[in-house]
Image (cartoon, rainbow, N blue to C red; front, side, top):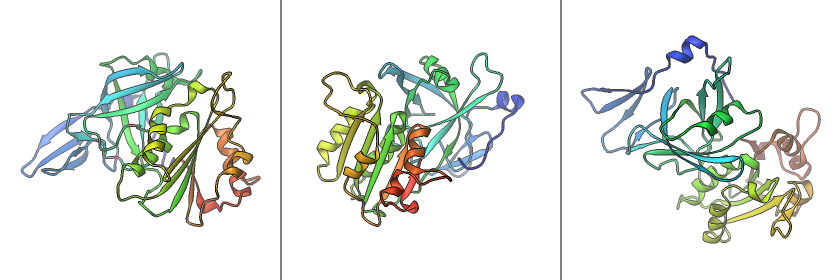
Length: 293
């Protein structure tokens, strides 16, 4: 994901949280030397263009299913917003107990980016995932360090008349962030189709929110669920995100865009690699029409 950030044990242990300094003109919020201006009347932003090294306290934790939690972190104060743009993620830093080296992993917020006072994440715990296991062990009152924002695709309202989001498992989080930003913006009229593939019915994260959006925005948003191991009597389509399924979707116009996020095998199958093209190219989509989160 762009430039690499290197940490030494000494640097990692010396990272500070937040220092606030008053100046003669407005307020400046200083995060270990990186300054973000908060002009009078404008919401303060937690994350600017550079590193933040900001330590945030966990406000609440909620089990969503057997391996996923919703974690809500408190921003520096109730009037602070994230300062993130659509498709951005945040790079987290921790030193899990028993780990020789620190761990850095990106996570995508799922609450509104302009919501003041808090950031929310859906975190799936993987069997050998050091950071996800550490995050699942956190209790309200514990803190987590956020290193910097990771800007993604530069979204411009109405640049594409229609887009398709293809998500697998926990890859729903960046797709949901973009979808939410589009539909909540009255000036953005982009049409959106979401294809969401998971292992079991219980893995359909954010299903209630997605179904509500489909109801609220008929003709603008459509969601298609597919489950590889559905329970008996499941109302959802059975199978993977396959060439056959995507072929059933109405083809995007020439200015359309496809966004993909999911497990590496799924992404390779859809996007391809140096050896062979992926399913999307086989279906006629140009390389410049495909973006991998």
